[in-house]
Every structure is written in C-alpha cells, then in structure tokens.
Figure: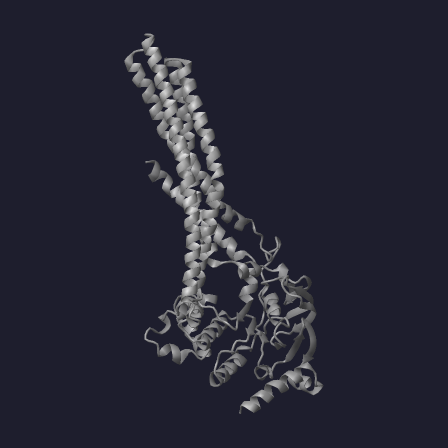
Length: 509
C-alpha cells in the first residue's frame, strides 16, 4: 500500500527535478555550453534526479518510523523489566548511529571520486560517438577506446575503494549489534538467575532487541544512501546554482507586432564586447540596418563577425552600448519573442535525429504540410526530397550526418524561411554548396529578403555584391562601410579583399 501510494509522488518529484534542471541547463549562456561535456552533463542530471527519489523515500519511510520504534521499545523495556535493559538498547543504538554516521561521512570522498570517474567515462564515450566521423577519418578508434578504457579503469579503482569502505562500515555495524545483543543476554540471564524474571522474559527481551535491530540495520543503510544521494545531487545543484549570463529582465516585454511586412530595423549603437579568452573583441561598433535592407558584414577571420551575429540574436549581451530591434533594446525584450522575429542560417547547420519534415518545421511546428513543402522547394530541396524513398519522413541521422553539407544547409535555409522572421541572418549560409546550387539558392534568398531585413556574414564577396550596405570589420572595428561600388572605388580594405578573391578565381580558371 505504501509503495502504491507513494510511487506517483516520488516519480513526480524525480521528473520535476530532472525537467527543471534540464530547462535550467538550456537557459544557460553560450559560454557555458561551449565548455560543457555533454556526457557528463547528461549523467549529472540523471543521477541527481534518481537521488531525489531515494532521498524522499529514506527520510519519510525509514528514518522517522525507526526513531519512533526505538522510543517505543525503550519505553517497554524500562517499564516491563529494568532501566538497564532500556539503557543497553539506547546506548547500543547511539554507538551504532555515531559510528555509522562517522564512517559514512568519511566515505563521502570515495563516493565523490566515484561520481567524477563515472562522469568522465560517460563523457569520453559520448564525445567519441558524437564525433564518430572524425575518429574514423583519422583512424583513431584505438585511441578513443583506450581513453574510454582508462576512464573505466579509474572508475573501477574508485568503485573498489568505495566498496571496501562500505564493507568496513558493515563489519563495524554487525560488531556493535552483536555486542549489544550479548550485553542484553547477559543482563537477562543474571536477572533470571536471581529469580526476578522468568525464562520467557529472557526470550522477550532478546526478541525486542532483535526486532529493533532490523529497522536499525536499514537505518544505517538508509543513512548511507541518503548521504550518497546528497553527493549525487551536489553536481545537479551546482548546475542549478549557475546563473544565466543572458536572462529576461523582470519587466521584459514581448516584441510588438509590426503593421506591415517591411522587416525590422536593427541598430548597433556603440557596441563593445570582448571575450575572456581573446585579446581582440568588438570596439564601439555602430551601424543601422533599415527595414527591408540587406546589410553584409565582411572581414578576415577573427574580426568579430560571429560575435555580431550572437549579439543580434542576444546569445550574448554587449559590455557597452546596446543593440535594438525596431527601437527596442534587446535586453528589454523577452528572448522568446526576439527569437521568433529573428532567424539564423548558420554555416554549420545542426539537425536533430528526426525526419526532414520535423527539422524544417522546427522553427514553426504548427506549419501545415503544404507550407513545409513550400519552404523546401524555396530552398531547392523539392526534387531531392521527392526522390527519397521515404520523402519528408526520411530520418537525417545524428546531427544530420546522413545528409551532405550542402543538403544540411538547404534544410537550414528552408527552416529559416518557414519561420517567416522579420530579420534573417545568413552566416555563410551557402558555403557548402556547389556553384549551380549556390546560384539557385542566392536567387531564392534574394526573393526571401523581400519584406524582411537581412544581415549577411560572408567570406565570398561575390555573394554580397548586391547588398544595400557592406560593413567591413577589422580587429573588432568598423573600418569601412558603403555599397559595393563605392567601396571598390575607395581602394581600401574591401577593395584589397575583392582583388585577392577575384585574382584567385581568375588564376583557377
């Protein structure tokens, strides 16, 4: 009856702990997720949630009833027989409890080492499986297996140490119980020899103590498990205590809808940002992308182009200045409403291990089948999907690895088009496409720019020659801006980049 009643409660608590921790992990900043180890994080959430279940069961159904039973047994022994019987039972329990708690506290370090080794082994396995193609490409299977084997060896050593310390605790507990029972038997025997109690009373006293030992023995187990549960929950609670660098303000508002389909106005006003691990960052960057305009951002690697994209999506917040959308500071908007208004097509499109249809509809899950097909055709995917045996229901594999790089990019473009944002960000969105497909996609993207503002990050300058304005970054600063023709005429940084690329193209031809 207890299990039938309590199991739904324990399961609900476990599910809630796991769900809240998972949601908190997703809310953390991009810096956290760039340094996390996926396998270790997953194991932390799983182990902490399971510990919650045992913690509740141990406290409610084991420790409290055992303490009540001890009090009742001591009262019976003192009232029916002699105070020395009650004192023996109490002293035995106290010594048992003190030694159990002391040794269990000493074992905490062993359990913590065990958890760390377990997380390390899990992260090694998940890292190798996620990067299977890289491991295979470099023939590093033996190295990956060796690293996993070493992690398991460390885990095994920690497990042996934890098991040996548990055995020591069990021996000490058994010894205390045996000594207490022996003292009780001697007391009862001396009382019977003096004629103050009968043989049946000896049996009664011994049985009371034996029956008291049964929950007491489980009390020791429960305390050990509760302590271990606290250790298992440590990492989960540490994760939940981490604050998100980017969070909604208490008075954040949803982005108001627009009365037309001109796109959003994106403005960078004196924005500065510097990563902790980099010497360079963005310094006093300012420009405005007017509604419906296409603004391109170019520059050498490390110039700050990706940082600008993350600022526009509010993945990070500027350390100085502000970024606005339609006159609203991004910090004053809810992140959900902002992400509905801004869509990104990254250079390396990440897909879920699901169907093509589910991946295209991820940005707008309520889209109809016809709308999904329309987005796919706009991204030049219609013929490709139509020729697949399972069509839209084709599974794309882990991270979309069953598709080529160009196919993944086209799925990413279709996903962004279906989301129908007012601001579209293209971060090298056609870098993995062949020339013919790129030309077709560029034509599609030119149509897609109608009615929305577009920010384009590009290395190939030929793809952004028709942009309304081109922003040239160097070492985090805007060094040039203007249309393609004006920048070529200025004979500056942009013109030098253009000449290098066109010279290389001519030489290749």
